[in-house]
Image (cartoon, rainbow, N blue to C red; front, side, top):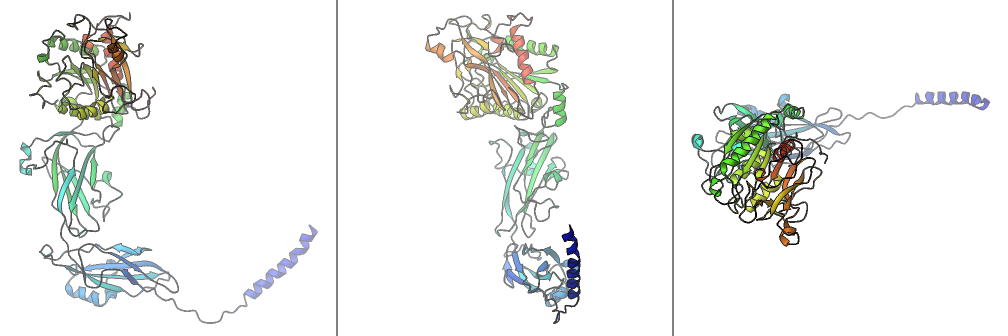
Length: 604
């Protein structure tokens, strides 16, 4: 401690000496004045060059005693001011007003969007527009360089061939040769579904476009708009809406012109609209527009709407069922087949039972054409309004023949679109995935919307497509007996020419997805061969325990297929719970189908 105290005086003396010496130092010579930077065009069209697209001009500014911190450039068209003023600016750029200069920091290039505004700009060949481009630099001492200028002539050919390349309509929609707008009122346009937002199963209404430009512009911009069909001046949505601003906005981020060549539309209300698209090149010349009419319908249950989801989760959702009877009376002449009226009466009784028990709020009946799906009814479609007003479809088919059964392509497309919107589908009958739908289209519908193994899209081994039994089905054994009762044919409703009590033409189904995670498929009923079938025979080994009913779950929709037909089963209380088995099974099917959409992975 004493040593430290003794050192303090010496430190003070040395510090004072250094302070005194610093005050006596005398620098010699004169301070040199700041030298302005020297602006140089590094890459620019030569003086008096003619260009057909916006040039990207590069520059730099050497500074021997500092650095350039700012650049100011100006582009003046000879048509933007009177010619005398323009020539004066050309002679003496220092008189160009300050407001005309564009200031940029630490940027060494820019795209100069030279206008093409000559009176005869659209002449052939186009008359060029003369531009004066000047640039100067400012250094860190605020000194300005001299101004360097160049004359550039601009020509331009407007963009052409503005075309909508892709649209949300069906592939077979005949857009080639679309009538003139004056004839649109007589042109049948497909109706499109629309939700407020995209979902797991619905990706929106996407339009893709392109345009040609012989000048190869440095940027091509587009402007789209959706307008009211009956009031074309009423813009409903457009690329200028904040909701559709993109990272790739065009030259002016606020004018609605974008560089994106596609858009995905959502949140359109019921009605008819026209989609317009036009292009603009880097001289701000616009193309002719392309257009497409469309009709929009939204389901009453929009699963993308948070309020709808909360109502569903809280038990406040109304369930409206559309019972579609596709039983074809032309196929009901054989000994296997039921009477069409009895099939419809059975299912209307089931709907009334569900409504009385509070499982559904209302139901309506829609009958398919009597010869469906035979030729002559192949173009039949479910009215879109009927689909939109019902959140559950119960499709029943009492047919039992070996050919011309199932769905048509147009109905499969409709049901697929309905399911994508979050609609729920129950299919009940035999040969529901029959031969009337083409194989590729069947694969898409069966796999994507019903969760079936089809076209190689399979979770487990086995058949890759449904296989139809002939005279072997003797019952549907429940995989979940605490949920679904096992069901067995009613001999009075399902007679067979070979053995009473066998239901023919029952399809064997296989799941696409494993029975866990999301999405998933699960088998709920399996094939039980009739007691007359010897377990040692190949027929028994091929059919026993294969699936005959599958439930499919995704984050936004559910579907179920019961391939044996509830109508043909005994409606008796074999469980002793006071509820006939078929009624209980159908109730459980509705419990499953009514479960709300999920936003995260569902537990098994």
